[in-house]
Length: 150
Image (cartoon, rainbow, N blue to C red):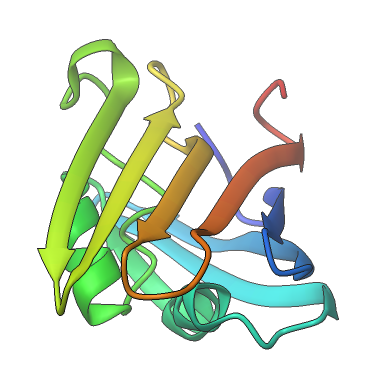
């Protein structure tokens, strides 16, 4: 269980050359949930619309409820909140989820996995096909953590 001061660093890459290191700091923990501060440590090439959506949705200080149930469709259609970072342990069979969404002639496919014991995001792969000349890909990977093993 994370404590205030713990952190996770995620590496984010896209097929268009975006490279980011995102730091998630646990600033508070109580019976209701986790208070997290999300900030980019390094950003290169942020021209990709999919990466901009993710970066915009995660930035700042926000609360994640303890009983959070991850909703990939909501995260990618609304692009808000850190709720994708944590899901209640045991709420997803095998600690993984997959979603396929159709919108405006495009198809978005997302696959993600979370630590089965702690509930924090380990990896996410997203791809958009159909709306652009070439498919756009987004990859998020756990790089480092003070309380999870990569």
